[in-house]
Length: 118
Image (cartoon, rainbow, N blue to C red; front, top):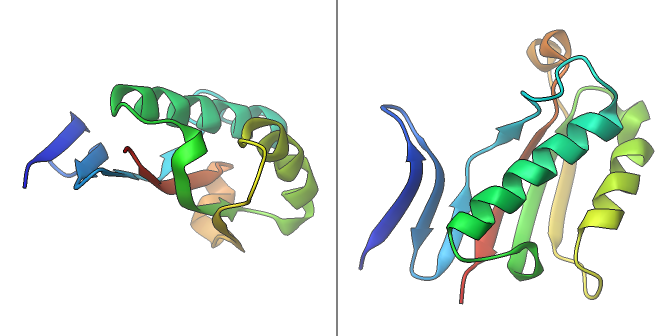
């Protein structure tokens, strides 16, 4: 079975496709550091859309997502952006959690997702 890798470096790939499933690396808001949770979430979801397009998939095929926040008081702010981005219909598997001190110090949010391509 072929494995496709996208944006591959010496340590990891940003996306990997195996048997019609796309696995994304955790994404951080490197284009919105220090900005609001709304802007950080938009930045990350835009990165995810780009990776999915390159892997010939899209968010409508999402199986699961893990979301890390540095402060759960920003949960509703993040959800507002997520809800406007995610494909309407039956929900996918999703977990949300608060990260440790290291994440707070960098003021970044993190998303990872697994998606089907077929």
